[in-house]
Image (cartoon, rainbow, N blue to C red; front, side, top):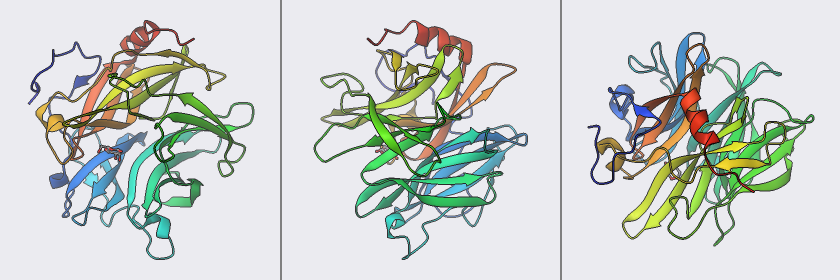
Length: 321
Ligand code: BMA
């Protein structure tokens, strides 16, 4: 399964787990089409994935999957953890998608931002939870068309910060950063990073992947880049580094993608040629970073890296002037 077709197999920073895909629709214990694009957290000694599950209507909900080793024996919430709530919430009518979660130490809660999908397009909703068992579901914080949101874990000069991807019709899809005093009112919108156009791997759309990770060198930002080809879009993953105290400054950006569809389960599926990480977990004692990603919009894979290798790589990337 490991090697895909074509392409020089890169000396990947991230190593695929030999048991990939680690979670498939067959593991859910209820009928579903696909499980993909999961937020990830380490809670009370367990790996928690808040996974997007696409049902057999084509609509998605979010459900918690727990595992002691983060690889197998998933215990899956059934009924699902968060589902569209019916006619009083028309903004959710086409489903809930692609969550990212960040521990907000000051508040003692996990912030979860996810896409809610309506006739007017995708938007971002915020929920909070202490344990991934009960959730306080808040309002829509980014109106359509917006998605791919992720919170920073701490405030900057008294304001929370959010990465997200607003799009207006016919325009590029770029990463923005916004600020809020209370997680509810968001403003001070700033364009953070743009697509590179032309033949670049991140030519057509970019969006934040897992939430930014704090390191001594800066905020490690993982993002997906999309290139449209005559055979369809290819979703790959690259890195950038943001200034630690002023995250609206991009310091470095990788020219190359660091993770892309290679294995058969990434090349083939409902939407082939897609890797889409929404969560990573750092084990501080070992420095191992575990990244969970949607593969071909069908299943979930796990890839690991040493944070020190990732940082050495990102520090070798070109400076952004
Ligand atoms: C993006 C998102 C993801 C999806 C990807 C590939 O626009 O909607 O949920 O994994 O497309 O289809």
